[in-house]
View 1 (cartoon, rainbow over the protein chains, first blue to last red):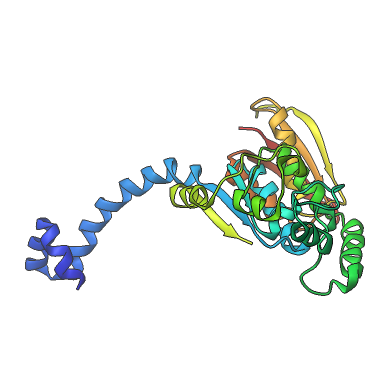
View 2 (tube, rainbow over the protein chains, first blue to last red):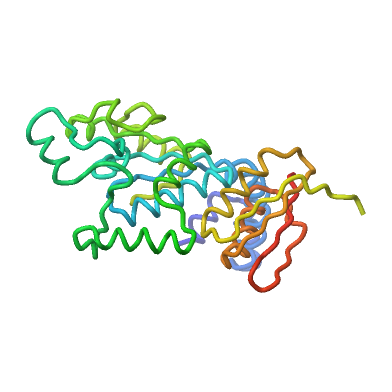
Length: 204
Length: 78
């Protein structure tokens, strides 16, 4: 298969192939063709890759991981964006907001799941808050920065947090419910645009 | 051998990943090119992480020592 596709596209490879057999023919033609281009692209492209986290779950441990990666990536000089959607959006509601939303269903949703980065629950071993409390104690003991601290560091280092317009509408969240420094709300097309353009994506 | 001026000390002792790196990045931003920072850390992961950070940001890790519990790095800004 490879010989057939290679030979017609490259007359030189075809000629060498006819004389010496295909293994020799493919090797010399491929090396000069790919190496200069690769070396050039490595300089221009690999350096410029952006990092895009899709913060979806809102679970304590996943939020934590997302904040660690976001702040580290910004520290490494990588342009970093975090698209916050569905439960992830709850993380970026102000800690002091207790009830959000306009209608009773939206209000009840926020009542059942307290918003704010400091009120995240573990996806397992939550035990009515016992799990997160122990995690917090352990983190302090071992010098691990809390999700709130990491979020502040990330913002300081220029990480862009972009809320999902659709989720904001669905939960009845307003701009003033959210923490300061959030980007303009956008939709899925913007996220796909970033992903297909130049971003390494992570869905968490 | 040129004299390297250590202009800032970053004390990240007792801090876990990713704070030593984050603090390093924040400190290196504030120093002029060619100057250096000294980083102290107790996070064992920082041995690899500092090297990876330096590689990714093309800053230079010019010294790396350890007394077994505290790791010391000298990083020069490119």
